[in-house]
Image 1 (cartoon, each protein chain N blue to C red):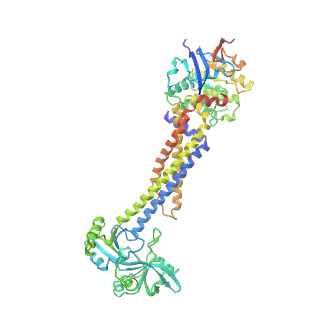
Image 2: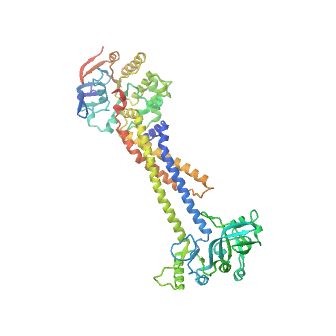
Length: 231
Length: 405
């Protein structure tokens, strides 16, 4: 089986003036379809940077990254954007729904930037509704983010991440802004999605959440400290 | 893709009404003022041309005025070059249908039973009425008898009649009014001619030319001769012929300048056009400045909007928007807002012009609409370019993480 994500000696440096900060110092791993991986580590360890490299929003300073067999390093902004749109779904700590859009409009947003496929608005709307049903928001299609609780917002965000049937869902501290009850619900939802075959990578510093994954990669000082399966 | 981004741009700007309105304000105002100015400018021009026709400057009339130099002067010339004999001689030209010599455009105080009024006195021949397209409202026109006998009779313009005989112009007929030191019998009242710009065409009294020569001017030299042509086909050629004809009659040496002017409707139109061109040049300058200001407003409001909407940009980038998608969205936004703004401006401007119609001359044409569409797109595209580029350059990670990292 080919890995959906293949990282080889990924490095990331930030330069500001003469100060060079090395955030990642050579990270290598592969993730296969259907995995649920948590990336753990203390703040500043470089886990978010790693996630955004995985998400094709940042480019590594060195090393090779193949997403679904495609070498990302050689792609233009346009191609990277297309790749993000088609293969990746994002879930953020602060939900990042567009406040002026309804839940349904937020879920539909990835279809705006979808290339190549014919515009099928009706089918997209049907699908967005199904996804909102799936995350338990069947009665909230036309609510705006301001009218939803934190847990509900994160469900909308998850539905949005699923909209274009991505290969991988990337979640950056998905429970970071939620109370323990809502946090449990979101984790359960992610586990459920993984059961249905979704590949999920989630960054967290909450060990409770991290342990729920099938595999746990711990980053410290820009290097992988451990990469172990969870029970 | 193009359509989708355009739709998103429309949708998003409607969801940020404050920015949308702020962006449009400048262009609305500047296109509004442009529309009104163009309407007034065109209206004035049309009115001048219209009025000049009423003044006796239809296509088939030319005027020979005493004294050389500029075509239009404020005061009648004191040059004593034009005579009744010139007028009579002009009649021999094959294309001349009628001539109307006249004297004096000078103001006198006229009295009637304690009422007085300051007005222009013109010494004319009976043909003046036909050449100048005057109608008699009441009473009779001037006749050859009046001219031959130097009679002290007069025709009143409507304004004069109303001033001296308020409420009942008809009462003027047969009455004696005092012009300067002399009493004149009112023989007729002229039909209304209206305004030539701010110049009241009804503020005048016509008296026989011969009477004017003996009583007022004390000389027989003419101030002008209106010439009615048989047709308006080749005015420029007729003008040349008349000029050559009069130069010969006046025995002018080739080096000497003309001591008269031959003015045709073409010259008038040319002058009106020239002044309207000047107006247009001025207008264009004002437009450029005001569009520049609207452009700056759009640019600044957009830059503010973009920094406000950074997170939104970051989210869209994460969800698959490329830099170009973001740039296009904001560029579209600038263009269509500017376009809508200028259309709104034209709308208000046309409405304003429509309501001004009764106070000042306006002309509603399609021209401002075309200009507005053009300028709207141009200003939007130019002023939106930089902010849109900036929006495309927003770092998605920084936007998404906000203050977190």
